[in-house]
Image 1 (cartoon, rainbow, N blue to C red):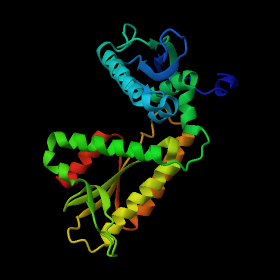
Image 2 (cartoon, rainbow, N blue to C red; image 1 turned 180 degrees about the vertical axis):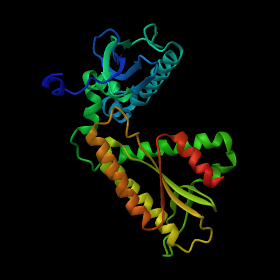
Image 3 (tube, helix red, strand yellow; image 1 turned 90 degrees about the horizontal axis):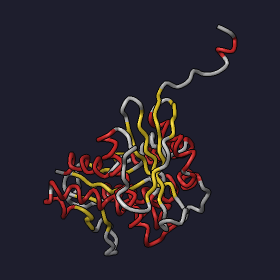
Image 4 (spheres, one colour; image 1 turned 180 degrees about the horizontal axis):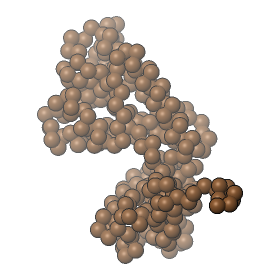
Length: 292
């Protein structure tokens, strides 16, 4: 063995293929946006990730964004169904016009996340730009809107199994002892459990954090108030992407973790629990553990 054998790291053993999935806003124009990356390993593992975040589509398409985001969700579900059935998308037929499958690209890395990151790095510049772009983060309209959608999804899931709890969502009560008639709204409130729902958007971390701070303050105010029907458990349910999300840069993951740590430090001093959920389904399941 020569000295050169120690010069280079060993080649990763995880092998697979990735495909970019493109959207043509004007069919036939040639203008394309990468909306997803699909990957399959040689051992049968597969995964599809969104390449362009919903909040970026709002900037690009305004009132048309919900329709386009819904289209992306349909495409991703179609791809996942094809991969579950055939372990590849070689014969996949897009669900509608304007969706184009990119070429198979062979890749090696440490795991599936690494292969997906390669695909995103090579063909989805908007994915990283939406996270890392410098911006004035005083605008809280977008984080509030997404937080509201997150709460609504949780409510809709719980409605399917525990409709009797619907009246406990978005409860408004008076907790101030001053002469004001102002009411404070809580995401969910009954005699056992109270929580507010929030999201930490990697592309709007500062604004997201400000909103969650306000939600913690409202929970703290209830706990310290003279309200007669105080619950047993006080909590904030926070939706975040996975730390393994291939669309997040290492810097974005670090900022997200630091922000979560800050939120937990703020909450723990008043014995307010923090539950981190990767999706509305996990959040709904957790709420039912304490509220039902």
